[in-house]
Amino acid sequence: MSNCKVAGVNVSDLDVVVPNCHAEERLALLQFKDSFMINKSASINPYPKVSSWTLNDCCSWDGVECDEHTGHVIGLDLSRSCLYGSFDSNSSLFRLLQLQKLNLAYNHFNYSQIPFRVAHFLRLAYLDLSHSVFSGRIPQSLANLSFLTDLRLDNCALYEEFPTTIFYLPNLQHLSIGDNQDITGHLPELHKVVPSRSIPPSVSNLTQLNFLDLPDNTFTENGLSGMVELDVFLKLKNLSVLMLSSNNLYVLTKTSSNDTLPQFHTLALGSCSLSKFPVFLKNQSNLIWLDLRGKNFQGLIPKWMYNVSVEALRALFLDGNFLTAFEQTPAVLPWRIVEL
Image 1 (cartoon, rainbow, N blue to C red):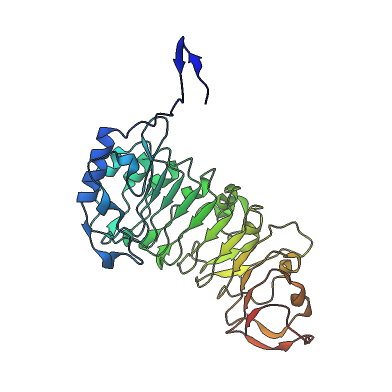
Image 2: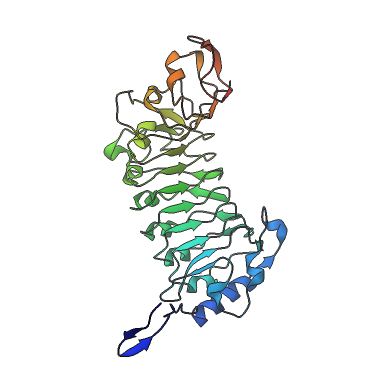
C-alpha cells in the first residue's frame, strides 16, 4: 500500500484498530462463569467454552462476539458449554446491555425460571434457551423485545399459559416452544375476529414468521378442547415450517386448493385429528417432510397425493391411520421414504 496523507500526516499501511472489550463487561462475564459448575454431563456433545476464559481481552474469548467499533459484547453463544446450576435473577449477565444474540441451549439450569430481566436486553434479536432445563412460566416481559426475530424455548420444563402477547412481536420469524408438555394456552380475544374455535387472531400479526414449532404442548382454548383452524396459520405467507404434531389439538381446515398459500418445506400435523387429507396439499411443491400420522384417516389415499411435492419430498409419514389402500395404485411410489 503506497503512502498517503491523512490530516497532514504521512501514513503507510494503515491498520484497523479493533477496540478491546469493556472492563465492566469482562468482569460481568467472569462472574457469570463463576456462578455455575462446569459439568460435562450437563450438555450433549459438551464443549465447555468458558473454561478457556482468562483475564485477557474478552472479545477474543470462545463464544463471545463484540462490536468491532465499540468493543461492547453483542453476542454470546454458550450452547453445550456444560453450565450447571441455578440461573440467578440478579445474574451479572444482565449487565451486558448491548447484547443482540444470546444462546444458552443445551446446558442445565436446574429448573430455574426464565428471568424476566431477559427482557432488559432491548436490542436482543436471537434468544435460544432450548434444552436447558428451565422451568416455570414463560415471562410476559419477552413481548417487550421488539427486535426479536428468533425465539427458541423448546425441550425445557415450562408450564402454565403461553403469553399470547408474544404473538404481537413485529419481527419474529422463528418460534419454537415444542416439547414443553405443561404449557397451556387459554387464549383470549377469539370472539372479536374469528370463530371461537380458532387460534387467537394475534398469531396473524407475525407476518415475518417462517418457522413455527408447537409440538407436544397442551393448548386448550376457552374450554373447547384445543380446536384450532389451520387456515389462520396458512395466512402467514412467509411460513415455511409448521410443526403442530402430538398436541391435544383438533385441527380444522376450510382452505381450498385454489387459495394462495405459503409454500412449506416442513409440515407436521401428526395426531391433529384431521379427518381427511387437506386439499391445500395439492399445490404444495416444496415439501421435504410431511407428517400426517394419527388415527383419523380412513379408507383410500387419494390419487392426487401422488403429485404432492414429487421432486422435493423426502419423507411422508401416514402410519397409525386406518388407511386401506391407494385410490389408484402407482407402479412406483414417487417419494423416497413412505411410512404407512
